[in-house]
Length: 119
Image 1 (cartoon, helix red, strand yellow):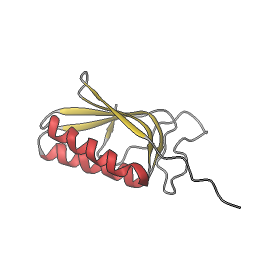
Image 2 (cartoon, one colour):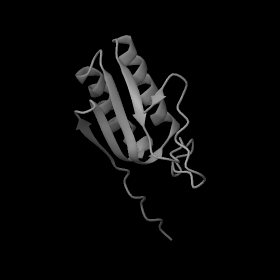
Image 3 (cartoon, one colour):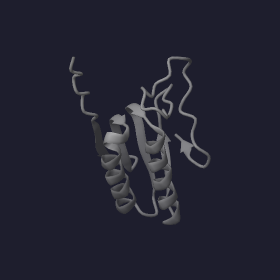
Image 4 (cartoon, helix red, strand yellow):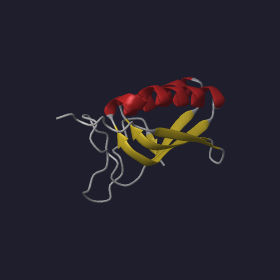
């Protein structure tokens, strides 16, 4: 019996002006890391020395490698005199195994890695 191919992971991004930053939607997993890395790199180039926001409220899966890319971008922005804030949906949790990144329990927000501010 053949196993049907898994559906392709999709990650979309939209630039925001107020506040300056990026709104992501879809899945952050191995198949979309390259797209995420490209957008986060552009974010640091577009807004050096500024505070920016990455909106993850429409992200359905967030793996740990994707979260690490966000932290690296925060570090780059801080080196340039800026900062990065996260906007997350209640229950979004990083997933080490590429499983869905939403928690069914409670209404808690993503535990923000040390040094990253949610907001």
